[in-house]
Image 1 (spheres, rainbow, N blue to C red):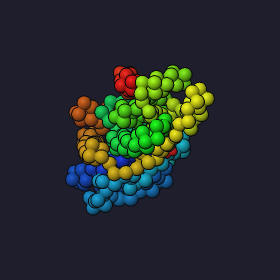
Image 2: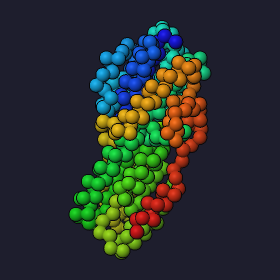
Image 3: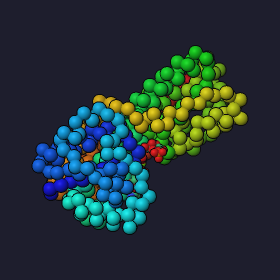
Image 4: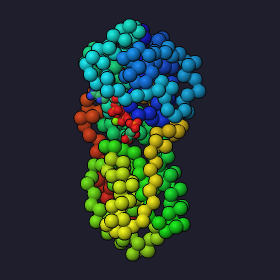
Length: 319
Ligand SMILES: Nc1ncnc2c1ncn2[C@@H]1O[C@H](COP(=O)(O)OP(=O)(O)OP(=O)(O)O)[C@@H](O)[C@H]1O
Ligand SMILES: O=P(O)(O)OC[C@H]1O[C@](O)(CO)[C@@H](O)[C@@H]1O
Ligand SMILES: [Mg+2]
């Protein structure tokens, strides 16, 4: 192997740049050339690439976003698009590829692997919805951002004796919502994985008021119900006048936490080591703290799932 390619795909996540730096520097250390493809699979199909060396990834370990930029690509989901990508890889002399992204990006990487491209994935998404890794790069930072917001909202909620709804990201996965609720001390959390009963929610809020609480914080993942729709339902069902804060893309930005920067640095170097060892169609992972490679399909076929006992703990401690 002489030259490897590198791209970031899907939603950006804090720590992607730290992973890029680590991939490039470890590859250079091994005597490899590196080409960075811009805007994920879109740039790969169009041959938009830049050579990367040890100096071109200086002073990015602490930066949010991704210097390679990222994209979602419908074109790459077609056979024609992937054939184009394959031609571009050959034209650029790339004989191995590192894909930094989430579950969708890994599905794309698996397609390339099936076409004969040696490919290793690095899990990076704020959603933490990839199986067989302790955490995905970016999730810890996003959680800390959401927690800080929640603590600020607690200040104003308690001062005004109000009910606040905090909507966090998570189209299909309630990990951020659950862990924000757990660490921020919410009264209640709504996640896409569990149906919710508005009457039960109103009853719970009423009980906590009756027990002497003067304000309440409800965390909702965007995929369960929007914060604004929940406000309307709470007004209809319980006469509540809730205030809504949608955290949105704020959660995707910012410098990576120590955890995310270190995780990205370890996984970036490990991904290059696995490519050089001849692995393909795998994710570079830390599972229970131990580096290991996981066949890509297992990362989406085996569901991580939400821990029921943590959902129950939020409820139990909300008395
Ligand atoms: N089944 C598939 N076949 C080929 N490519 C795919 C497939 N699924 C997803 N991709 C490619 O991967 C890209 C990124 O996927 P997706 O938008 O699901 O984000 P992700 O990697 O899961 O990250 P995040 O969830 O954090 O945004 C898609 O836009 C598409 O180009
Ligand atoms: O608007 P975009 O970029 O598609 O991102 C939205 C989605 O991306 C994620 O933030 C993951 O990056 C999801 O939680 C969210 O639903
Ligand atoms: Mg995803």
